Figure 1: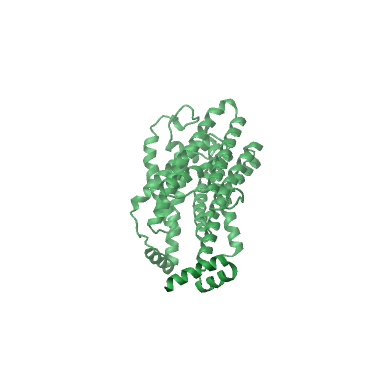
Figure 2: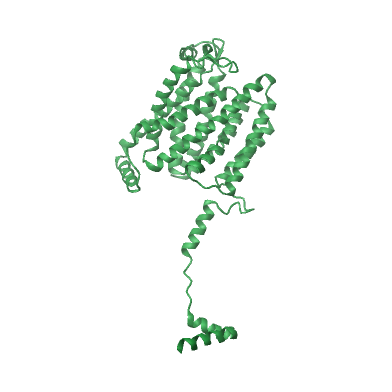
Length: 399
């Protein structure tokens, strides 16, 4: 890829991450028929529609580049990876994705959008713990420093959010923060399962996301049949028909083309599907052509972009404490991902770059040989005492 294409790809990821968050929040801010739009399960369903559309990209790729696809499969087999995994395996990470997304939408409804995005940066903490337990990864000093800063930043952002909310909203905001933190566990489980999956099986990333999208539609439909009959807790306001979800209420609000928020709501719902579609496609392209590290670093910019957008739209007010918390979380993530190296207390001794340099040095270092005659001559010249010892040993060996 050319430098210009790389820059456009990175900007596109930021814009897609920004737009998807704004579109979902705009849905929740809409009021139709005197009721706020609060449909987390249906919003999850929209997300999975966007993911399922990624399967079309895989089919196009397979059709246009059959030889390249065949070679990728052959190379994967040579590397010991399996092909054609059971389609039921995709249900496991998808169930985690369903839980993470749905609970996350409940949390988003209870807090400002920027707070939601910034708190989500604390997901790194649980992912690291799960990676050590299940993937047997090793954490070094700079990793622990990054995690420590993440925890500090997370606490600062949570405190700043509580201070700026009204007394009546504190309980809902606190619940939202707790729910968002709970998603760290399901999201981390999904990441670990997917990583183990790719260690054993070969699958095109777009195909993988597509299968997760199809399974997500099935799981969400099953969830709708359950949660549409469960009464909504009193702490959650504006529940559709007093239940956790209402499918008729969703379609009624989306297709009621009247009022202040229409037809904006209908347009936003449609745009959300395509935003998720492009977000997954662009993110996977960055992983393929650049690196997963680049993808994670660019993603760390999205919360700040979201915050600036919400300030410009008048949805939120500036809070310098929140800014401090975000900066600390971002620095922690950059240290953890070795973008920032701290040259004190050996913080940079176990980075991937330093380890690779030491391994290369050990491989290139020539073997040490000892020339005994030269050693004896050197001893005679430089060390008379050693000369006597060597001469005695030589005479003893001769006798």
